[in-house]
Length: 195
Image 1: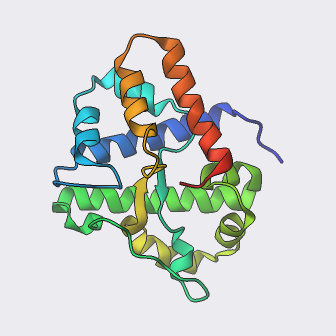
Image 2 (image 1 turned 135 degrees about the vertical axis):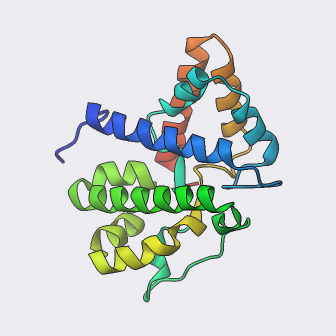
Image 3 (image 1 turned 90 degrees about the vertical axis):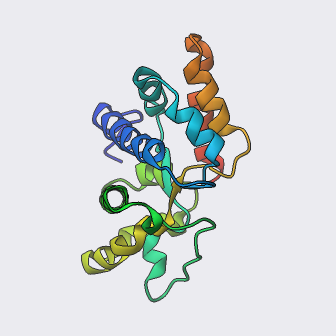
C-alpha cells in the first residue's frame, strides 16, 4: 500500500473534512437531531471556541460518515432511509453547503478506495464490502450517488453513547492528554465498527 499511517497530506485532508463538517453541524439550526447528533450536543459544539473546534477537527479519523455508503443506492444495492430529517430540510444556503460537502467526501472516499484500500477501510470502517463496492463504482454511478449522498450524511459514530459528548468535553478542557486519548478512541472505534 502506498500510504503510511498517518500520512501528512492525509492528515491535512482529514482535518479539512472534519473542520468543514463541524461547521455544517454548528450551522445547523434545526431542532432535534441533525446529522445524527442530538440538539444538546450540537449546541455544546456551537459554544466551543474556534481553537477548541480545531482541536476536535485534529481527530485522526473522519468525523463525518454516510449512514449507508451511497453507491448502495444504485441498482444492485439497497438503501436505507436515514433516521432523521434529510439535509434538504435545511435552509437553502446550508443545504447547498451540505450537498457540496457530501459530494466532495464521497468523491474523496471513492478516489481513496481506488488508490489505497487500507486507507479507505480506515475511513469507511472494517469489512471489504463497502470499500470494494465504492472502488468498483464507475464515475457515472458515483455522480448519481453523489446527488443523494447528503441524505445519508451523518456524524461518524453518532449512535455511540459517549463519543461525541466525550470529544466536546475533552476539547473544552485544557488537558492535552485527555484530548489525545479521546481522539485516539475514535481510531479504536474505526477499527472495530463502522458506526
